Figure 1 (tube, one colour):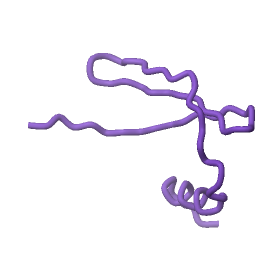
Figure 2 (figure 1 turned 45 degrees about the horizontal axis):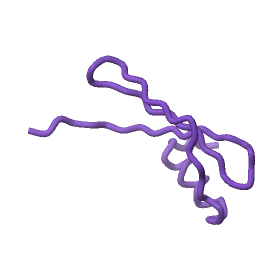
Figure 3 (figure 1 turned 135 degrees about the vertical axis):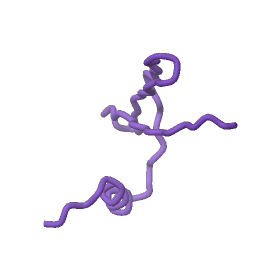
Figure 4 (figure 1 turned 30 degrees about the horizontal axis):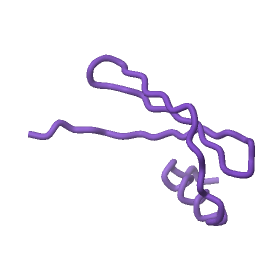
Length: 66
């Protein structure tokens, strides 16, 4: 089986799920700083009517503008 990259895995997951009931409530948002220039953002979510919680992971790169 050929290895797929993370982008392809996420794209396949999103293409395979139904586009219904994707609204979610965000809970327990936390931002933790790691020095002056770095932080980690973490939040949980729930989709109605389920009581199952999920965790949202976001990655970003920020560059200083001239």
